[in-house]
Length: 246
Image (cartoon, rainbow, N blue to C red; front, side):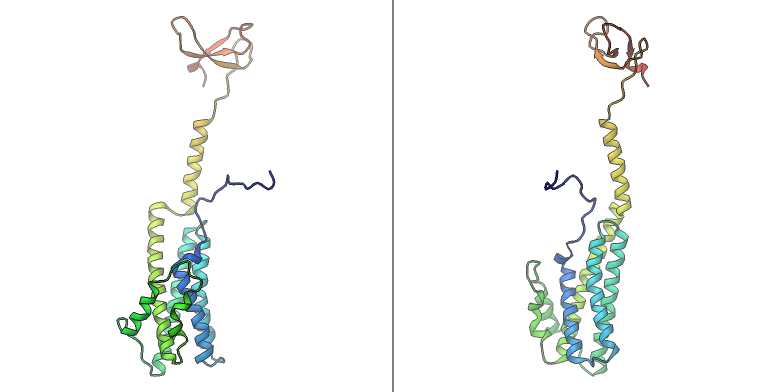
């Protein structure tokens, strides 16, 4: 009926929901921060601007595309998340090169500055409207050294999350199979369900060739036993045993 939702069809596997993925949320901060960083600190005529922005965008977009693809292809999801990881590695090198080539200090992983940025990330929740707000003090700092190092910390966070995501996807693929395996299993299950509920076609009467009906003997030595009796009974008394029908 029109105007009435059809809930009879459901996907074998869900897709989407990438906006709630922590990896996507941090990758979004990295992308926005990179656009702003290039605008503030790199000559707009430099090819490096396009390279860094595209790498940041690729990291974010491929996380989203992988999530969308999860409903129909586990292998595609794995590939796209791996592409996101590789793009962010490329971006990481660009930020490290920026610092090294200008003689600027790169924060060590366990430095107080890096630990402060990492600590902020632990409080990121899916219901927050803009995760960038947590990092404003670093991302809007006047010194490029501070901004670049903060983004490096965020890239490491995203890569850590993507590594966990890839590991979980690989385990899921190993133990549950991909979409094609799930689809094949569902087809077998549906076939078995139909076989359990399917009713055999009634045989025809050997005397008059009319359809027969399943009946139960009420008396005699076979009392309580089922048999096929002619639907024209009592005009026709043809019968068949259950074992006589293939």
